[in-house]
Image (cartoon, rainbow, N blue to C red; front, top):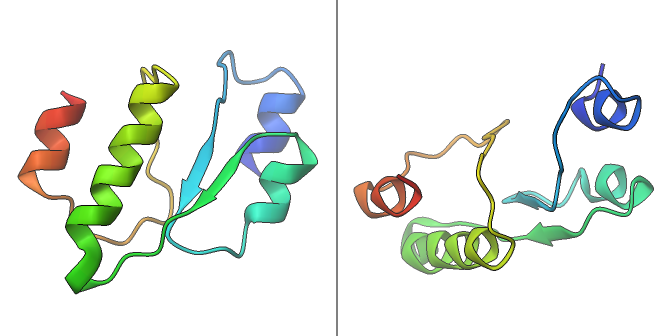
Length: 84
């Protein structure tokens, strides 16, 4: 069962403020629930910029918890430290 469906059904006690992905394929799921979706592709050459953009989104929305689903990337120490 998709996590957004479970959230919409009241099974997840959380406020989902945004969805960010390095792939655009699930943007329609977020749109179904009027949750802002941000497509931030990542390549070896753009990893620092992509992580910075993600951190900016998390900071703007004052996010307390980050769930990395299907995010098959190695996070940099700087990203982890910024989230800690």
